[in-house]
Length: 72
Image (cartoon, rainbow, N blue to C red):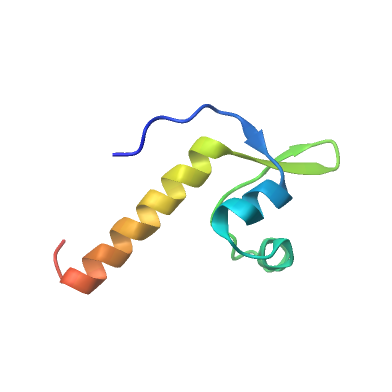
């Protein structure tokens, strides 16, 4: 199990580094509505909670594991 994270807010560049994808990919998916992690708007800036990112990653890896093993 992953250790609990603080509810620290991260920006799009930190999120991109964490997920190892380009920030442009995140922006594109946000604009077309397919990004799975809901951002928090502070003024004009978007931020994400580290805990939300960790939960989403855990959920995606669990779904992937179910598909590969064929178990619920």
